[in-house]
Length: 245
Image (cartoon, rainbow, N blue to C red; front, side, top):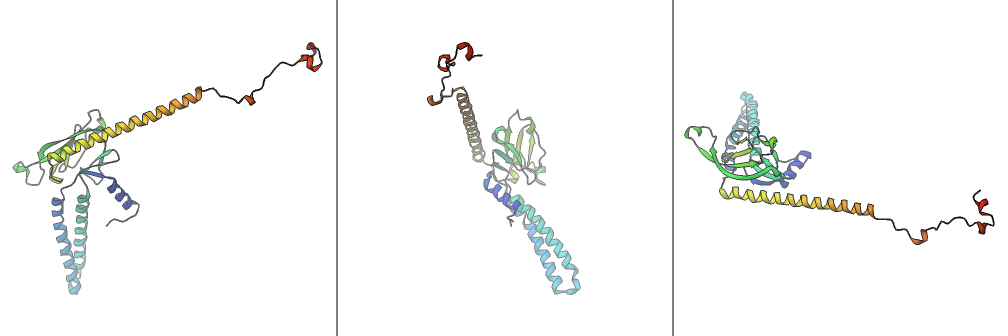
């Protein structure tokens, strides 16, 4: 349940603005809700027994603890269900490979996506060499600050500017899904370049207009012009020598 306070409102706004490119493996995560659900039912049963049989009132505490732990585990899984693996928001590629807070990669350093293969990283599957499809995100070589990050190994790998997302914990990875990400990235780059050019043109136009205004000579109305002449000695009735004395 989402509470519409400052935190809840921000979550709803971010969810609406976010464009999901790769979802989690909801079927696998939903199966993980079975155990917390059974634990909650067990705890509720213990509470019911304690209510009906006063001699075992201590089961109320045990049942309450089991219910609380089950709810906490279910909440973690449900929170994981709502998180994608890749998303786009506000000129950033969001990569969820660990905490609830994603890595926000500036989209201008994202070069391309391509399909790969890697270990499934499932318990017991490593002995049989089980593999899964992966999505690999290549970042610009010049982006030194984004070369490496510590991520959860079961979800992916991040090294030397290559971000790997394992298919074990996301929706089925297909060639069409991966190829669809590249045109979207190219279109975003194109729009950003167009916006940058438009902004530069606006700045240049503003500077040119200011320069033209500074170079333009002021034009005063003829009525404001005053013809300043030397004093007329004859009109004043005095000798020229006395005028300047």
